[in-house]
Length: 128
Image 1 (cartoon, rainbow, N blue to C red):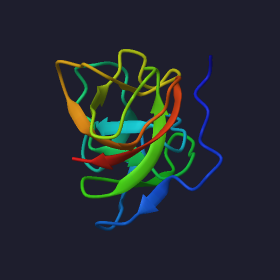
Image 2: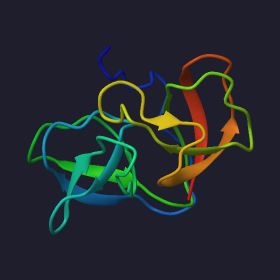
Image 3: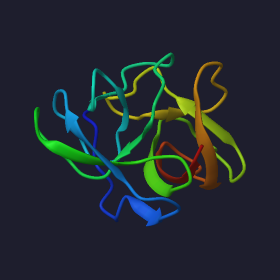
Image 4: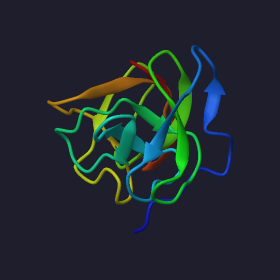
């Protein structure tokens, strides 16, 4: 299953401004991204990746992408079912492939869910 960018705006509420980086590889809007070199980001690929935020829109390799970081309320995807408001969410093992977030992670906590879902799908997350 390919990653699908949410149809609604990714940013729900701005807590801080978005920062702009150069994409290292193709990145879809709403994907978790991590640093890869000076002022470059790449999509997260697994549970040990240290996500810095969520891509604001879809870009190709080498293009500039805005990244919503800590303090922002965003929409992104989860592979987990029954995600509830207040649950901590983590970088998933399938990050960058289909669904980026998961429950019960042991590695990098990305944020707190503010609006849950009963099946895998779009959730609102306050980024940490």
